[in-house]
Amino acid sequence: MITILQITPSYKPAYVYGGPTRSISKLCEELLNSKFQVRVLTTTANGSNELPVETEKVLKVDKVDVQYFKRFTKDHTHFSPALLWQLIKLIKAAKQQPAHKLLIHIHSWWNIVALSALFISRCYHVPVVLSARGMLTSYTFNNRNSFYKTLIHQHIGSKLLENLAIHATTTKEASDIRSLRIKCKKIYIIPNMVNLPLLANPISISAPFTTTLQLLFLSRIEEKKGLFCLFAALSTLDLPWKLTIAGTGDIHYILQLKKLTEVLNIHQQINWLGEVNDKEKFGLYRQSDFLILPSFNENFANVVIESLAVGTPVIVSMEVGLADYIAENNMGWVTHTDPTSLKNCIQLAALDHKKRAYIKKEAPRIIRKDYAPKAILLNYIQMYEQILNHGS
Image (cartoon, rainbow, N blue to C red; front, side, top):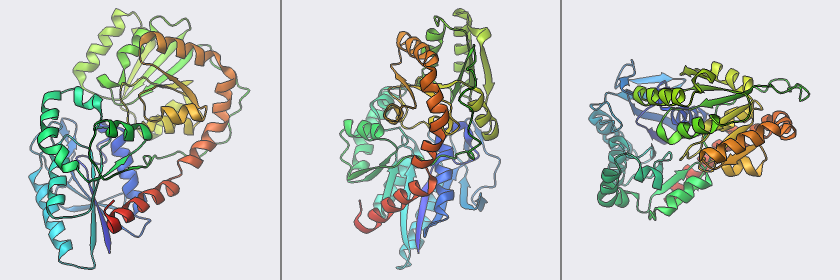
């Protein structure tokens, strides 16, 4: 028997954390169709709130065995002694059964759950893989609490990461990790698991494009997403436009952004929707001319795959993990994050009706071929098997 123990500071339905919550849960659900047993240890984290779930008991969450544990801190440290104690108990129990193999898959970094779980795993010599989820980059080192991150990395993190198997979701994320000169054993590059909608009837490419450009930003609202640069770009755009913003974030930061739109006199052209569910989300993609993501740092970006899955083109910054994929497959536009570049890119994309029609017709088929869950699952299974058999 082989158990893959997934350890993550948050799990569904904590959708406030955006794409990682969806990707991790999708991976666990797909693994149910494999030879592995799956178990999730997580906390009740849901932003500044807690999930209203029963704690410590094994619950079935879309058929996956999940244990939620209370956390002592309400911030991103996610301190949960009960979770760590349960991890130790499960490791000891597995070691008492020679026929029971255990592999630990840790998601995220820079929090007590991830750091402590990795420390415990290494102390007990249990095979482990870390999915940093975009948290091992020069951007994250230099953004927010940079002094403490550097201190932790120098004295604890770098040692824990030595000779470790690390999972990256894109070649860009892998490159970011290598740039930090982390002495890991191997980096596996496997894309996120993404929930794709059923393929609808092909959309007629002869339908006229809207005269007012319908732009969509769908993501967690935080500084690294580059919204303030997008607002500056839109304030000088030479085309009629509307922007829909779907997502949540720190209320104080959102208020700052809303004030900026008033200063730029674009507030009447922006619709702030807040959090949307999956059904509403795909409807928004279909109603939009473009999904736009001008992030300063993005390891993958599930929304890019979701948007293209329904034929809606994307405009992304070069710092988005899937930027190379978009450019190589001619399924959108890639730009720098400064306002002038953003403005020029949006105008270029809006006027390129031929390319927009091609994406509308071909992207849904290409995405379903390249991001088929069964094919991606095989890559995760191969990674787990290599780590179990060879430690890398």
